[in-house]
Picture 1: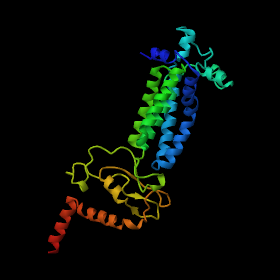
Picture 2: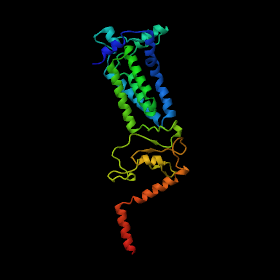
Picture 3: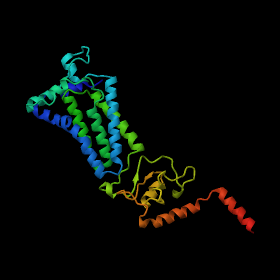
Picture 4: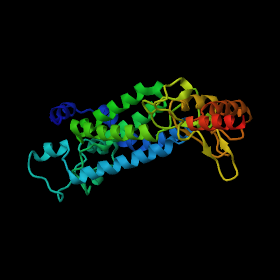
Length: 310
């Protein structure tokens, strides 16, 4: 049920080449990829993606460590060394398969640190698996053409954790689950949408955040008026001295579907400025549309005023 057989099968035969292949994602990429992903998301993703990624990564790891402390679970190496004997926090941990890397490289990278670890039984959920899944989900969202590589990395690190006897399959499922939940919450509410025709963040003229609300019908698209309205960010105040501003034609079209346009100051790179000269026609379109949206009460007042003037 928790993957003991799978872990035992994958770790039954060990070779130096496999040890190195397992060490690369488990001992190197796991610590380097959060920084690498942050750099790529800042430069090549939509503006505002990096803060969402950082908060999602931080809160997910806090949740994972909390679960490990409240619900301690032993990794596969404990079962191999101690069977089903009761465990206690005073007993030493183990580097398991990573000890072979220390012997291979002739250094003490893992043996001492894992043996003296204060929390030797934090196997569930696997934060190696959780971090990999969260990284893959964010990266495939922003760079969908490279999705196979991100999926391959998740499979790679999942294999390495079981090959090195540090996690059962259920630990990886638990880590992947909290990563997926964290990602979908972030995407539905705060994650900026990528525009695949843009290469860097400085090419963005506007930013749309979150998923499109369902059931939103706007009058501009011939809706029946049951639910209409502009996105909350369509008209935004840019400051005390700035005027109300309207996004570009593409943002105007997307806003008619209920999206939120996120503005910024005119000095911010990659965001539409309120003084962009080629937006006069869009302002005219807005004024024309606004003039047609007259409430019944206003029409009654106009009719009464017309009869009085006669």
